[in-house]
Amino acid sequence: MINYRHLFFVVFLFFYGCVETLISVTIIPDGRYHVKIESQGDERDIKDKDFNLPSSSNWSVEEFQKQDIDSDETIFVRSAESLLSGRNFLGDNGQLGSLRYPISVEKKKGIFSDTYTLIQIFEGRNIDKKYPMLSKSLLNPGNNKLENRVQTEIIMYCLRRSMKDVSTDQNVEALLQERILNHFNGVFFKAEEEDKLFDLLNEGDEEKVEFLNLPEKLVRTNFKPFVDLLPRNFIDNCINRMRDYLYEANVTIQLNDDTFKFVGTLPGVVFSSNADSISSDSLWWIFDLKDFMNESFTIEAASVVYYPQKIQQTIVLGALVILIVLFFIAKRKAKS
Image (cartoon, rainbow, N blue to C red; front, side):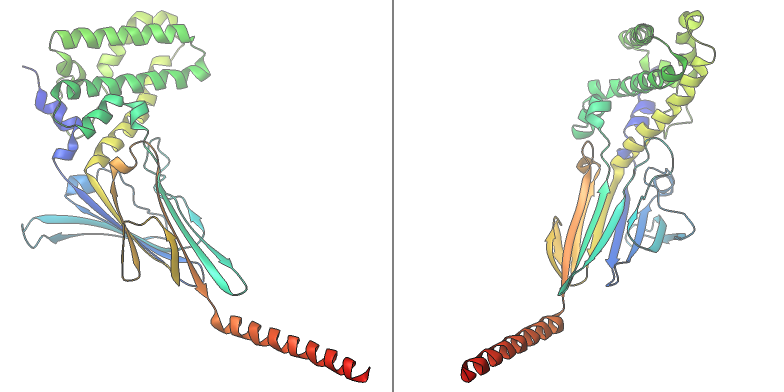
């Protein structure tokens, strides 16, 4: 019997949990800024590493549990906070496909005022380009026919990109790569026609239901007709690279159950922002994967701090200069 539960659980994790992340940024007058990032959810979602909190030595990291007052369920909390300056590349853990969310704060000093600019970018996932069927499924859940093909689409994308990467060093012709891809497509098409696709991809593994896994046995088996045409270690290198691209796909899938809130506080008067709302002196943004499925999602705000005393001093000084000039002009006219 075909294991539909397995595929649906693997691909559509958003049915099974939720993570809420609050990012708080407070800019202080000297241009530095305090950042606190806190994620809350169930244990599996907090530890799936789709959204990486900073963990370097200049960050204070904390993990704890608390009870939900309404449901009495255990909520897992992970937080990180630090005092930063300039631009910081958050979320980049060195792995392909990690969600990066760089942040920068700039202070520009003027004669009569200081200007502060805050920018944070959640880099786009390019889902439409990489996995168009996954994109449609995320936007229109419940289409079983479409959902059934998502796993195949992702495996084929990972295979295609991996062969292209490895071929750069091992010089495998594009025509041979296309032959291999066509062979794999034929295998998947036949399995789908015979209603055996899920068993084929999941290789009978009933335990690993939380992630999209690499069907290594399937990949090695279907590379066999081309072994004599491929350089040594090409298949091993492709499989290793496929794991990187599968990690990227898993991050994207798991991000679908994450919601983000960003609250920013800037010195002085805010004169420009794309915030969703303003509460007191705080700017608020609420967003999720749909906001950076393809293009990057950008948080922007700018404020200004005026120095009235400097303005007053300049006006007084200017007035004195004018009076002095007028005095000397009048004195010269009197002598003449």
